[in-house]
Length: 330
Ligand code: T6T
Image (tube, rainbow, N blue to C red):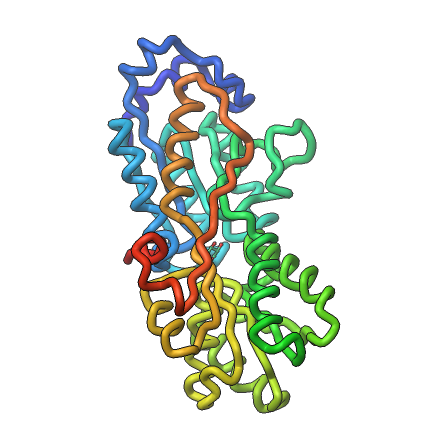
């Protein structure tokens, strides 16, 4: 059990739950030692491992404690007990990437009710618009993430150009209800609607399982031999699709626009498996997540939305250290 030495305990849960942020004098804040928990979407994903690194850097800079606790798979029924266990440890704040925008509302409300401020990182609950005073899911103090709709738009533009503005494509995606990947698909389809020669086929949902994404690629190719391209909407969707394309001997023929940037994208870009990869900046998300929680805990106001950037990787720029530094670690 973590000792809650923070002044939240002294001030009571109500002020914290209301997110007033007017909690203490700076002298008291400096004396306080906060424990900030980060609950990732899953622990075994280079994206969240990199986010953890950024969060740890911020915690170290601030002299605060970071707890990293998550499930091993992208799964609501695994994430909720982890969250319950984290709430039971009574951290001073929780950063979380909720695995479903509806199903995590009530579990996170328990944290809010216990006076533990919540920051959504990467994914959100509800609409992702927080502190508005409306709805039952606006209680998190901030949402820190990539602009996922824009990322989908960028992938669509790149894929449309790669297939010469003509042909059939589909989205390989995780599962409906995940805010980030829903938004990427939305942005992708919005943009593709402007490309008359491109037909977007039914989305293939893979449950964040790269093997499933590979098998789906092969099945779609069986039905649609002239398949021109795929948007892999996250790390496992893209890497699984890449494997499927390689197994089918269609490398460079079926074009892939990939979201996320594990180390393996270097090879996939260089050998023409990927046209492009959109690297998010997960270390920034973790860093600003901790900074925001700390700011809130020490009485500062915090933006309700912090957007982090993208770096578009291609075979032509991936050797540039200013680009390659955004490859995920872990
Ligand atoms: O794409 C990231 C993350 O942004 C998304 O919410 C879930 O999938 C990843 O973690 C990559 O696997």
